[in-house]
Length: 450
Image (cartoon, rainbow, N blue to C red):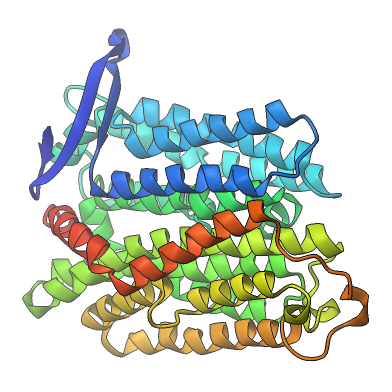
């Protein structure tokens, strides 16, 4: 075990020299945050492969890219050496690039290049920050636990600049406004399984980085610049929800909803940092807001995976994902309509499903830290309900569009992964204490280091 300030403990630690001259180590370990996100990765990867049952082009390479991507994502979540973290972070771009460029839609090459350039260029501030941590630490080290314990970057302009640079790097991956423009194109063109992993797990690398780097390694800058995180979060929440109202393509709608939902993550982190550092009666609410941000990442991973499975299956069966072209499909494809409706309701935060617990936890934390500002994200729930209920009414209910008289229902290989995710919606929505207690103790350890 390795323990850092605030009684924050890493377990299952493995460490051995890798590049001794630079003090680079093969160094893996897990804490509560890592465990939850690795579990999400391990759950969604086989489900993404199952939903790709009808892929017939270069099948061995297709499955190899998924396993390669699962490895790099888990490597990011478990790395405790900055150099090793950076390697997994950069190499992880390769399999997703090829999944979009080779197995994607008509504009796949444009989308793949845009995805690669955005995320690669945005990682340059991360590279600079990694070496800043290395050179500021005495003795020089890439050991993340040692850097968290010593906080080598002194408070002031350097720490604040590093914080902003890392916000750009991780905000692009999350993504937050205004760094999100690569996401809709990537989702629209990616194969269904690729969209499942992209939304379900890959975006969570951004939230993980914000917590591990911006909060843990730059605690004074986090306290100084919490308002920037909050501002970015609020704009992302509102912008994503409002743009969704204008979308007709189901995949594009879900992509922009991800921008809105990831805004809850940055807002929850900001509320946790400010509320806990302010002390007084804010501590408990701040911890819940911080825990809620992590719960939101987990919940969004499950829900967005289901939504992209539904959107991908729709496009595969009838050749369109445009909501305006649909109508009454519940009459011909009841299983499809059921999973679509449950996924929409989970995403808009229906009580009893996983999305409600995540958003409500963030609301409590935001109210504890920022007071009446909580009404801004609460208002967004109205917009979210508007675009999802509108989509359900147009697509599932109403008179049947004659064009879909012969629409087939979901195949058993499509039902199985959607059934697993629907069960997860209910389990973590009805018994959220399973995760919230786990995260509450961990959050107190993280925030105790501020």
